[in-house]
Length: 104
Image 1 (spheres, rainbow, N blue to C red):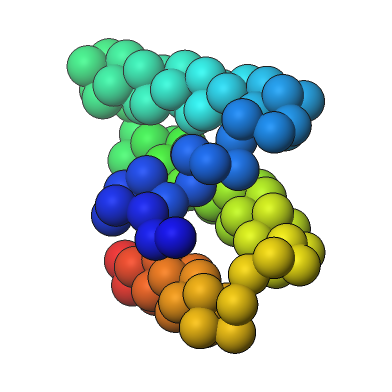
Image 2: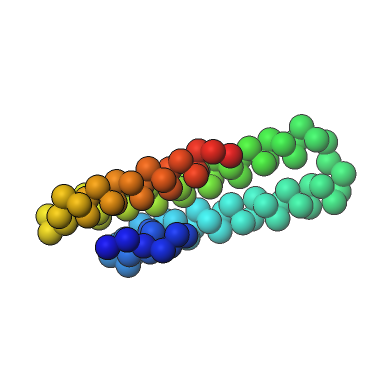
């Protein structure tokens, strides 16, 4: 089974609500950081301080991405019912997703 681009991770999120809760918590935190950055810009705060917060927000989103990849890999690659062809497809999906993530 392949997932449409942009939702490849959704199948894994239904199985473990604690992981899903962690991801939502981290996303909410990153959202708050982005609002803080906007406030800093509107208040004309120092460029270095704004860039520091941007870096912290990126790090928070990177942690979300890592958790999503962990969940996806755990679900897909421990599934004994997958054929070799399906396993290769999932590996290709994962590598593609990681490539998009790393090419900023």
